[in-house]
Amino acid sequence: MNKRILGLALPNIITNITVPLLGMVDMAIVGHLSSTHIGAITIGTSIFNLIYWNFGFLRMGTSGFTAQAYGAERWDEAVKTLIRACSIALAIALTLIVLQWPISLLVPIIFKGSSEVMRLALTYFFIRIWAAPATLGLYAIKGWFIGMQDSKTPMWIAIFLNCVNIVASLIFVLVLHWDIAGVALGTVLANYSGLALGIVLLGKKLRGIKDLKAPKSIIKESLHWREMRRFFKVNGDIFLRTVCLSTVFTFITAASGRISDEVLAIDALLLQFFTLFSYIMDGFAFAGEALVGRYIGSRQKRHLKLSVRLLLMWGLALTVFFTVLYALFSNQFLHIFTSDNALIAAADDYMGWVLAIPVCGFAAFLFDGIFVGATASRTMRNAMFVATASFFAIYFGLKAIVNNYSTLTTNQWNNILWSAFMVFLILRGLLQALRVRKDIYSQAQ
Image 1 (cartoon, rainbow, N blue to C red):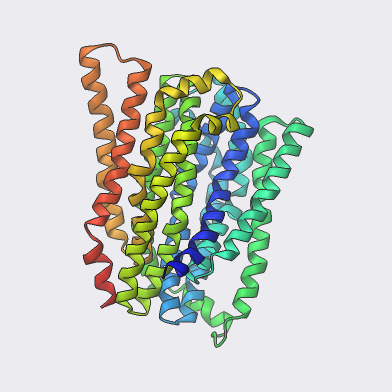
Image 2: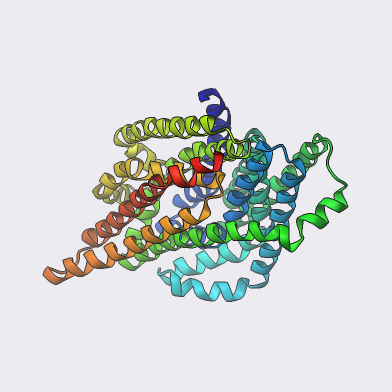
């Protein structure tokens, strides 16, 4: 089972490392321009996190349904899931492009920064929004391949996409001097390049599946309301769960900007530690999606329980590894993203929170994957509701208490923000852990 987990997890880890590279490369390029550019790219990427994270169900729901169809050897149903996801992805993407101007009017309301930071952030937004069809289409394609127990294909797509992004962004910014617009354009070009490759590989995979119904019949059945209803029900829960997640991360960026431009830049740098850990841990979570869905579909309870137990053991091992890694090399890591030594020195005051990230967060990532594979979306949604409510209660509660006794300093304000974030991570994992027997194991009876 460990071999099977690693066979799925390692390509997913490589894939997931390349996902934040889109943001990390952008951050590294503009980080050597100015702290204003760091703030702008942070807000710019946060806008798209807020938008795209809400549609994460296009990947998660697709992988869960596809994995269960794979385990039951229902190949027609697996293809129907792909068609549903891609159809919804295209409809959402076109809507986002049409509504880009109204969306841009909300940006200054949600995020705070200097006039120059906001100008650059909106420049980035109006260019990158045109990548929406490619970005959301890749969500669906990636989820489908993972559900089909194939994590290598998404890996090659992601590697290709990021190579295009790195080369294009460097040329547009360093050679053509297109500033932040060049970074955004490089991301757009990379996403469409990745989508083109994904479509080619998808066609090859579909041709290898035997005994499928006629394409016209499958398309017609996949879009029938009765067939779509369960897809929407499960993904509606995932959507609400993801809205809460994106709200918390958006609030962190917005709250940092309200403290100061320097704190906005510091927290943007510190969140790169979280990003790196989360995407590597999600490699095992995606393996959990594939395996849990497969064993529920095939009703193999013993294999289901073993896969969950081993996934958690791998999570604990990675927690220890990353805690030690961050303790030893955090300063070197920060230098990758900025050459501003004063900013790095200021970030040292908050390094304790970086060390807490793996300990507080590993269970949340793994149980997300386990519950996605089981399409147990209601528990995921409810756990996120409680964790989000606790985040805001702790943030505003501690802020009020501290303010009653003294003037709130910048350091206190930011530490309160990070305290609330750690509790948010802990509760997500804990509340799902309490429901594993009832919501996961019971499905393989």
